[in-house]
Length: 317
Image 1: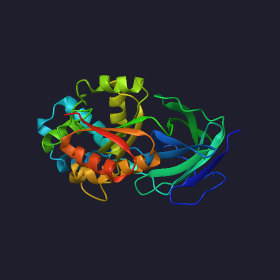
Image 2: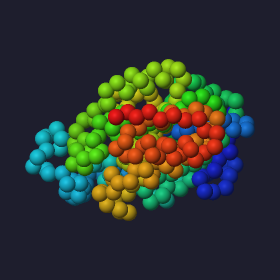
Image 3: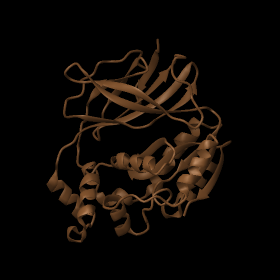
Image 4: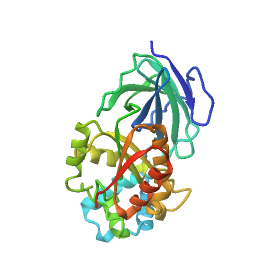
């Protein structure tokens, strides 16, 4: 039988799971890929997701389009369709104050309380040998479920990347590193983000595939907001980039403006990279990015700031 010790981030250890409020029929949950590391007695896994209620918001969609400077009259029918799809991820009703649990590999894990942006985070230590062992270069996709308000359960999949203490990890940017965005030109990055099919940077998938075959694990660190996780993860999968964890920017239109979507990526990336390097100080790190978002400066500062880290930087564009 699998047993766990669990803590919602910022709270104390909790030896058992609480039932919580359960999901309503119109509420949706996204579980982001989880990162795990070997600790005394088992695997410590970072759990992260969002709970929200989708719905049509045509007025808000128009407001967002105007705020981004997109001229409706200049969009083709296909571009308008893509804009409506991608903007819809920003216009959901985030559910705050939700308390529920996740069941996977025979154990139930409390997920803490969702914040104003609908996100929830928890830290679980799976202490049984029955938990699947780490396999170099591969991710585990586990069946999971969350209780519903009516007493049933919502079936989900949980991707878990279990990293050994030693090995090779690749921290990769997304915009203009594996996906063409043209971040230096605001009008182009807006169109490439919201209105056009994502296009891969030529040759990068093949490079990453070779590294993955040699055992490299991947962490996609991007200043793109979590609202774009689904289309970006689908892009990575369809273009045969290796699976990995995603680390994205928290953004809420109520807290700021849509203009801040493309501002100061280095302020977001630095603490995320530092967290990864401190979690796995014995791993070797390769940083892949471009100069458009100051990746060389961010990567260099983080690698030099943590003693003992072995790291190298490659520029994609």
